[in-house]
Structure formats: structure tokens, C-alpha cells
Length: 180
Image (cartoon, rainbow, N blue to C red; front, side):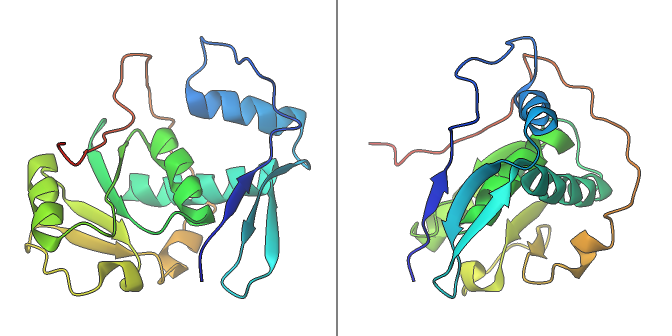
């Protein structure tokens, strides 16, 4: 089933305070409109699901705590290999909050290209789910974090973590193109 995400923008200002980091601007919006719908998506069952700003922030916070428990270095590339569903967007926020560099890997790429990218990134982890991983044979130095096993994320929901000290010059996103 095709995944669809509809980001709802009716309650979001068109301009943000540019002194804030993107996740801080999002958290500011959460404080202003916690119960407003942040976005809608089509679930696996075909039902339209909604997440409020507070719910989205809570999910991102839990994922961020988990990412920080991996002892990521600041600006460490974190490859994400998932279909673009609601969890993909949660992970963008979580990476920002954890100080990691969000690095999407296209599921449609040939295995050789994915392995090349992981090597170039010097990745220690790959965030995916078992269906996205498929038959990709990873080097031993890369630990798979399977989001189908969400228990490890939920266990960290009450964990207190130090805020990551980020500045405007920190890398937040790394994108590989086809080279064409």
C-alpha cells in the first residue's frame, strides 16, 4: 500500500525566528498549539491517522533519547532506510534533537550503491525496519536498528538526557544524489 503524508500547515507560522534551530522552532510551535494537527497520514490498514504537534514531539523525543543512548558523536551521519511514512518524519526531528546528521537512503537503490554510501558515511548504525532492509548484506561494523522492534525506544521514554549543544553551522542533513 502506498504511504501518503499530508503535512497540515494551517496553524504554522510562515516565518520562524531564525535564531532558533529547526527543532527548537518546532518545539516553540508545540508550546503554542499542542493539540492542533501537525500532519495526517495513511496507515498500513488504509485508515487516515493524525498526529498533533504534542504527539509528534513526544514520538520524536522518545526516538531522540534512543538515538542518544547509542552514543552518537555530534554531527555523526545516521543513515535512515525507510519508506517515507510518518515515522520517517519523526526521525528527522529525532536526528535534529539528538545532534545526528539525518541521511536518507533510497530503498530503490542497488545494493552496491547503498553499501558505497554507508562506507562513505563511515556509518556505525543503520536505522530501518526489517522490510526495508531486505537482503542487504551489511558489513559487521554497522549495527542495524530495526524499528519493528520498538520496545527499545519505548523503554527510554522517561530517560533524562542532556540537551545537545548545536549551533547554526552544524551539519543536519546529508543527501546523496544519483550523480547525474
